[in-house]
Length: 284
Length: 155
Ligand SMILES: Cc1cc2nc3c(=O)[nH]c(=O)nc-3n(C[C@H](O)[C@H](O)[C@H](O)COP(=O)(O)OP(=O)(O)OC[C@H]3O[C@@H](n4cnc5c(N)ncnc54)[C@H](O)[C@@H]3O)c2cc1C
Ligand code: FES
Ligand code: FES
Image 1 (tube, rainbow over the protein chains, first blue to last red):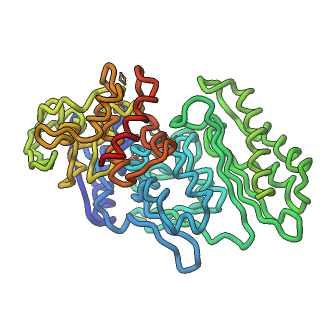
Image 2: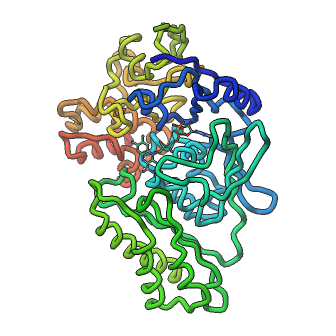
Image 3: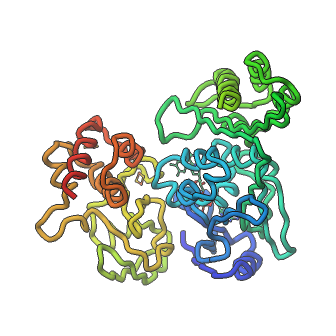
């Protein structure tokens, strides 16, 4: 196995290389997933195109509207430590800080994580719960897609072979919005989630004005719990009501049996951790 | 297979090696540069045995392509001691019995060095965070925490 390694400095040059080499090209950012795939012979590209020297893809900052722009090659560690991320949402900081170990966080990038689309990853459910969108460029121009709609199956996204994620945009949160990220880790602290729950809720006049609940690791993609959200909309967030809403996620998730537990166990843990997340939001 | 010439800055020295492009930093350090202190463990990013510092930040050399490092500074466990003088972490690991079989030790030392370089007085929770995912099958970790705490007092 051998390949040519390219390190373009401009997005246009990276796109040019992607078009030129077509199926034979593979993008790499932090490399934590790609190096494993290369080593195991699961991908055999003739051309590996690194994004890390493209300055325009890096950095994290506040957007003029008060939201956040996270460059595709920003590492999880940079996001975890960013004062701008924390100012927008400490729950988002927590989601980045929940990823594996400090070493993985130093290497893995925010764009790489979204493109990799492992449903057990931590940042994507939280980004989806906060209504974030990714910007994607190709030779045909730029498009924007909600993080929620990017992944379509295990390790599969709507990204075409000639598309590059350039940034993630998190909109400003409506005043009064609370958010939380909880990761259920019954085995070791550096594991992937058995179940994770990202939730954002806005209360107005003592009732739920808006709620978004996205679960990780319990389906082929992060799962938006729409029935639970609907059960909360407009309601007074009593303990009973939160418990009723959380019970609905059992039928919204689609977990697999694996070494982290049976599908039935994960359904039950999805209910339990959703209820805890909602309670934490209301009692915050 | 075509080998490519590559210059890396390792432990303060520029080293030019002929490496196959798909080889990881771990393989290049051990096989091309003879720096066998960095250990091969899982090669899946899960055990921390291969931890080195790149520009001071701990990374997994088994998941790093040497071409991607450019002119960044790589520090391996061989770069810890100053001549015959051990790094305080090395002394503390020896004194506290924090190394038994020693296989995890180079990775532990590098993870702990990255922590102490940033935070001279870490709490036990911060030490646990920093070495989370550095697996040790022998010590039960307590002696490692104690060694890092002891070293923190003397750096
Ligand atoms: C042992 C281990 C444990 C982990 N645990 C967790 C965990 O608990 N939680 C968690 O959230 N994550 C975890 N991760 C990280 C996660 O699984 C991915 O490896 C990581 O997020 C990928 O990011 P990267 O920048 O390294 O991607 P790369 O490996 O560089 O790329 C991944 C994929 O995305 C594509 N790609 C990269 N950047 C772009 C872009 N800008 N545009 C389009 N395509 C792109 C690549 O072509 C490739 O197909 C873990 C990883 C490992 C190795
Ligand atoms: S050998 Fe690199 S993490 Fe195990
Ligand atoms: S001392 Fe043996 S693995 Fe840690």
